[in-house]
Length: 303
Image: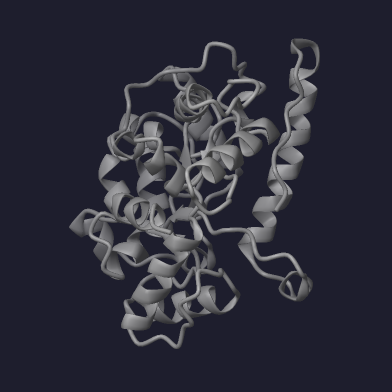
């Protein structure tokens, strides 16, 4: 799995963060759909990340529009216009303008309930457009402020992550791996639910904080800050078991293979949800995770 890289030194920080973004974008494209080459590669697939469903994306777009922003079509498809509108909203609210939907921004939009995978009854009953039914939704992020909290916590545990800027860079990956090894956790190295749980920060993850910014992070650097929320192998096993309990032919081994998105699509179609194949919070709730993030954090902490 490719990681986002940042180099030490203020003079090259912005340039290095551009390198981070390129690597991160390639990694995210790799997660979107498994190619034949990726399936045949020797390396195990990258761990999955949490998503917001197309229906939840539509709620975000509506909230942005109500706040005076211009998110483009309010259709549940996350595009450039939505990202730009979100960054504008974040900047006005004193949040790092990453353009990624994160837990802090959901709180500022008054949409913290989306973290439970729930939707208002009227929104849940409204059909999605054909384009939205084909879209993956969008990755759920944590803010640069929360990433920085995790970096500080790692440093206090003796796993020094290098620059503490709220960007999950190579130093953060190495610090996470060191902490995971020292605490008997599966080596992952990402911003993952098992790591957050082990650092006793999982409670804050689902409680949107007051709007805030990382002082050292510029607007140019902000899009590279924060992080998607990854699962560990134990978290994947919990997903696999839930799918198996729902009648899907799944091997429960903790490995994220192309069979799992296919099984998710089948389950989503049966539940009349958008068949994204992604691990979105609404699907997790339908799978029986009443509180998706806390439930998976607990599962991810297991060996």
